[in-house]
Length: 71
Image (cartoon, one colour):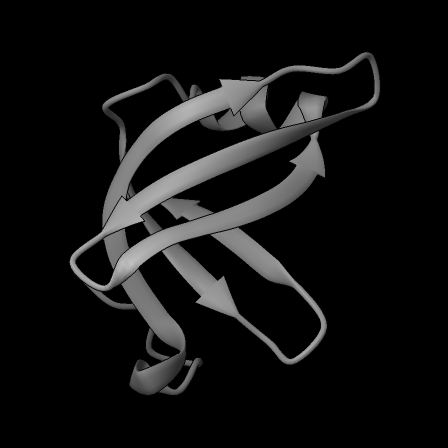
């Protein structure tokens, strides 16, 4: 799966390795074939996406941020 509106070179499929939860924001480490990609997203988004270690995700990378989409 890929997100069609985003350039494919900016997408890294992987699995959630670790989530460090905070009250407002959480750190999500995604293990990809190219290494670990880390995203800081709202804790509400972690909950809404149902992210847990082992979840299949796509890390969407912009020059200033990394977003997460659940597969």
